Image 1 (cartoon, helix red, strand yellow):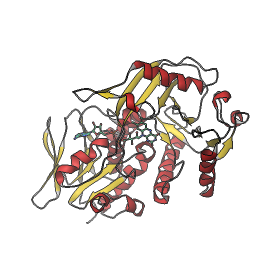
Image 2 (spheres, rainbow, N blue to C red):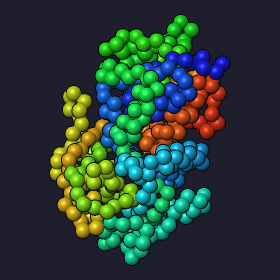
Image 3 (cartoon, protein in one colour):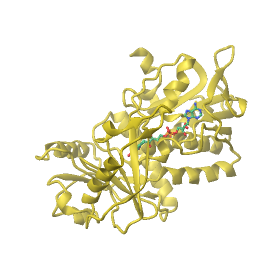
Image 4 (tube, rainbow, N blue to C red):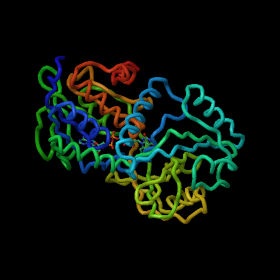
Length: 375
Ligand SMILES: Cc1cc2nc3c(=O)[nH]c(=O)nc-3n(C[C@H](O)[C@H](O)[C@H](O)COP(=O)(O)OP(=O)(O)OC[C@H]3O[C@@H](n4cnc5c(N)ncnc54)[C@H](O)[C@@H]3O)c2cc1C
């Protein structure tokens, strides 16, 4: 396809993947309309732990993409290190189980491919990172100094400033939109309940956990493994935590405004869905999570929830990212991934490049949507 035939692109989905893709398209000179069902960041991007990492075991292709993702955040950080919504304070991890064998195995695996990884113990953790309750720490834990975190609502706001300056058009609260194809089977428009039909040379479906539902009517199968999850944000408190903590009973990170964001999965069975589709969880379960998080902090401060948000966490059925043009629907690109915080900037960059150049990026080769048709 000749360069820039895809002049006008409609991006469907106002989460971090859609917004990043939209901004990268604008940077490369495309006309962009960003269309989303509700408000920006009303999906997973509004309730994400957003730990920036490539820790643990994964395919080398996925690791390489995640490291490129972290690289783009490092560049953003270097442009203004004072931003309180993007920090690189490292990560602390330990596994359940008493003997530390799994944690040690993870550390050795990480060192084998030069992912910066250090063993820490209660007696030494303060030499690496501040603010933790050493009594809560396992005897064997890992500290990964290269990791960080981002607040996605802040990142989206930042990117939308550029989006507006570059002339992007935002249509929010449009309702559930769908992709239309022309007689030749090529994506030609997005049809919205609020604004009718928006013609497009190319369409990006970045609808988070709804992505499989949006491409399904086009005859495209993408398996969906998205679980329901929760993010709790505390009221402001004095604390000196800098790292992201991933521990057996709570995952926490600092959050702007001197608050703490908390996530985990042990409470998933307590989440209920009502007839309207809304999720809720009993408040005592939230209190229990707050206690688990408090235990990790120096001084075990009493944590109070300012908010807790529940909803689907986008995860493709095989756990790997799904990026690229749909073979069955030329002109329609899917972007659906777990770890979308870590990947947001690099995914937007590479997908925008594919749309405008017509050339497939080699780093996305193993993440094509067609793999589900073949499985
Ligand atoms: C609790 C939790 C913890 C997480 N932790 C991490 C982590 O530590 N590290 C990490 O890298 N990632 C993490 N993630 C994942 C990361 O946050 C997500 O991958 C990322 O936010 C997904 O962004 P998205 O733009 O794909 O989807 P979303 O943010 O869900 O946005 C999709 C948007 O599309 C809209 N939409 C859907 N269907 C339609 C339609 N038919 N028409 C119009 N609009 C539509 C939705 O309204 C929504 O606004 C976590 C996520 C959660 C929920």
